Image (cartoon, rainbow, N blue to C red; front, top):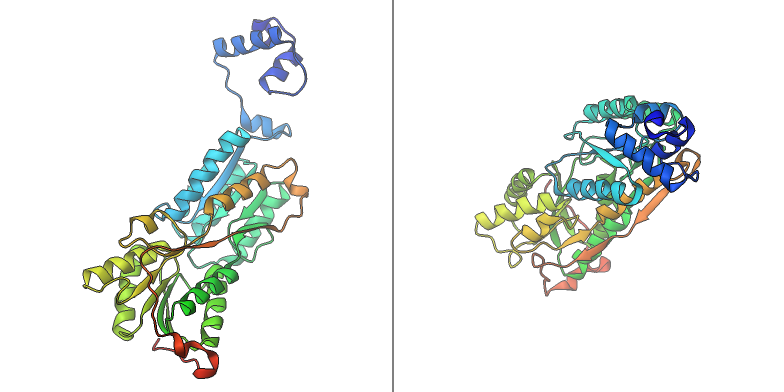
Length: 348
């Protein structure tokens, strides 16, 4: 390359590495022309071995069929290119914890600069020890790791405050006069689900709201089945609170098919403010989780100058209510004060 361009090896290397070292524009043009003529392609693995960065990050998402993972993947891949000149390898773990661990090892083999864990909505504890060991191995190699949800790992977390989300939802229910509700949440062995549920039910119990909870998969299909079973066990509930927009979408489809008016007979609430919230009829009332913002914040962290030396706890991403057409107020709120009634549970 240097011989073809008529420059020194050092000059050719500086141009090809896009070094900040000043190089005469004429010489730079000669090197770039020679590289194009000879079909030069940089060896990123070799660059990493020399102590540089590959310009590649790994993103492990829970399920490509779930709308909110698409939001994250689109945001991270776009920002990796536009803001950092990098690209992201997106791995679909298909809600399989063992596949997630396998992808961590594979990404380590490819010597990526960092990894974002965006998987969720599945059992996070059965293989937790193996996951912890894989994360520690990555950290020993200097590979930065960040998570988009709390998972009991020693990595920065870029996520909304899940307890605050639970309280936001509970307050909204109470303010709108609902006293008997069904709750369809994601898998029980999931830290996000646990935090939201504990905060939500604690507030609801203090306001004498009866509730029944079912833990299901975070899919539209599971939402439809969950709504049917909830209605069969507790036919008089007035609101259905769902742990994701996908669950709410499936539940709403089932209720409409059964001729049940939304929100006249049953109000439905989702979580995430994904595209499904807009596609649902009526438009879902939901919670904006700012998934793109979380993914971008995690990406910026792992591509910072020296992420391995940064002791960042992560970042709390803001959330907010998004009022749609699927949730109605009940105009009989008198029985919702704690002093008027004892909290109870509907049939599980």
